Length: 415
Ligand SMILES: *[C@@H]1O[C@H](CO)[C@@H](O)[C@H](O)[C@H]1NC(C)=O
Ligand SMILES: *[C@@H]1O[C@H](CO)[C@@H](O)[C@H](O)[C@H]1NC(C)=O
Image (tube, rainbow, N blue to C red):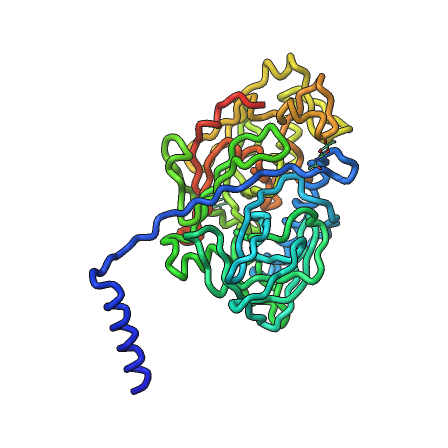
């Protein structure tokens, strides 16, 4: 009786509040963010070291998830060192009510959202401790602390109530930022809370969807090529794609069924250099947190010999001369039934940032590198930032698919 009358008054309240019922289809909401290249310990940016730490973590974590979900034992041991990430995307995110703003790294390769690395967590009336402890390790560091629920304000029209967030009491590897906004697959939150190894924590994208703020649990990502250390040229769109940021049509492919790539934003892809096949159709991942493009060792060796490149010991990157650059061919990625081309200019590190990575102005450095294992590992490529700054991409959980389109930057000469 009490319940039904309470329900009735709620309904009346709702009807009273909305005399004319308006069915509003939530549309995608944009969030600009900054792209920052971080200095390594010795001043110069060590991309390879930072990327390797991340790749090892992806392999380690993927193998652990495959073991748990598929009962397959393919655990290898990778050393995961603590280094700062080479490239980070930072957005200012509010937590609490009134909100305190935190500079958070936006990460598609992890899924816990947490604060407290730099600025301390400020409790307000919306803060509620779950009493559980939480810990996550990254290729670039780690954090541990207590899990809370609180209001998270991504932008004025993206407000989440009762978002589960970590509040760090300890963290390492996160200088200059306050924590992470994790927008990777939800499965990556498994095992991060005390008490249960199978509990998943709904991500901010999951909650925006379940709270009706967005109509599809999907995130669109746009970057423009970066030629300076830090610039606000990225845009994240919650709920789908920003049609003003791409050219032509957005094409979708199903996420890959191959393990361990399937525990990330995994797809199948093949690669040709000019007319030479470099990588046959195989599984890998798309990852905003990896700086370069990594391909299986056998594929990398083919690319190295086709381009005539030399491994540069100072930077860890492949290098070519200016005249080799002038005769470079296109690198063509086939995803689904479409091809996506990296022009010669899109295959090189921005020359204005050569000294920043410890390189020389007399060489041209290539952004394709070695993933460290031969084709067939289930993780045969990582399309990182240097690929993603040439295309618009969509990470769609609701429909288990990945979308990609060309942009005004695809064939631009910027590097
Ligand atoms: C990175 O190091 C360079 C010198 O190598 C310096 O000019 C620059 O200010 C540093 N950037 C940051 C963000 O510390
Ligand atoms: C991807 O490749 C694997 C292995 O060749 C294949 O089994 C799978 O059907 C392909 N497509 C998807 C969407 O996983």
